[in-house]
Length: 337
Picture 1: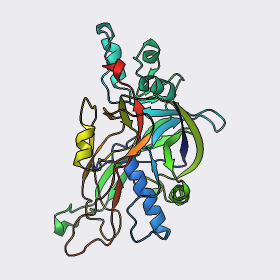
Picture 2: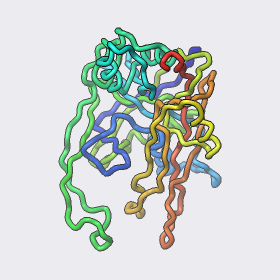
Picture 3: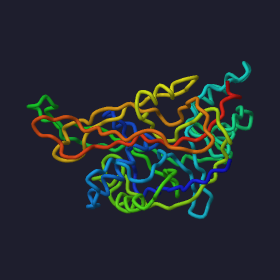
Picture 4: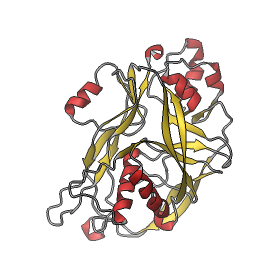
């Protein structure tokens, strides 16, 4: 089954820092999770005065994958799109243990190898030879995501009288620069009307941490990609963070032999004057998780959650939505087990 997706490529014109829930600025992620991206798009529309309906529930009419790396040397050259490594255990012969260790460290596969794995293909010598650190690609991939450290000083978020730090502290922030036309991309399903309006705003505001010092600005371009997927997969794999609709759905998804990891989502509220408060937390299934239910077409599952904390004396007057709706694709694991 050939599935054609619309692709949006973000070309960064400045460095970027992508943080997680921990206050660890010395490490930047190399992907932008779908829930953070969706929240940034929603916030951009709100700042621009978009007239959301009173019963707006956080759904913008489209859903995206998380943002993954792509390599593109020049504007006229073909991009290499990377997909998240499936959370499966590859069964290899005893004499290939060393190769298995290398394979376990791969975080991203190019389209060709990803299609092979989705079809149930077993890793072979050509795949082993194509491993380049975190990436596995038929093409030679240079270091297109370089890391740099920036020294900063911070004023405590929580005042000393409330139990916070007393002094200004020096810290270091890791930033990522993309080489050439490389950057991050995402797949999209649904009505893109609001998506492109939001992107036109967001590209001027930036994404990630420390946008006030010039981080995270980008331009974007569109493309399409055809992915060869199983006509009917015995498993389903998510390309976005996934929060089940309810306990019943979670129970169904965990039947059989799922392979997954969980990630806690939350973090600080960024809207003044609530910057000293944390959002409520929710756990989501990470990208690349495997769930044992048959899937014959790409689909979306999950829900949007409101992470607004309950504050008695100064209540927040707006919801804080996080999208746990994920894109799912068919995946065959029969040959891997």
